[in-house]
Image (cartoon, rainbow, N blue to C red):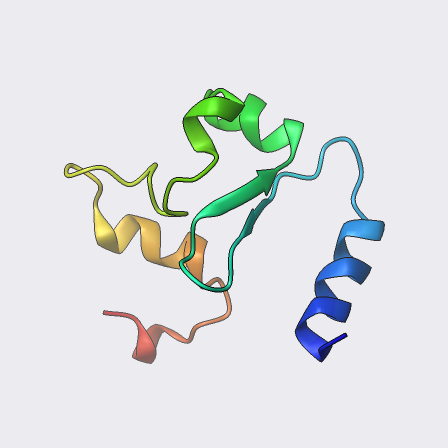
Length: 81
């Protein structure tokens, strides 16, 4: 098992019913699983999410500057676009 897989599995073992997450394929970044909490928060149905790119909630009217801090919360302001 690679180190990244071990970290991911450790995270999933620590999740609770309120943990919102998506799991994506390493080969093409499509969603292969997500939590019930993520579905509830986003309003999507599981069939609408599986197999799509992980950025599918970001439509053409999404403000990239508003989405950036949510995707990379640890990035310093100097590194943000």
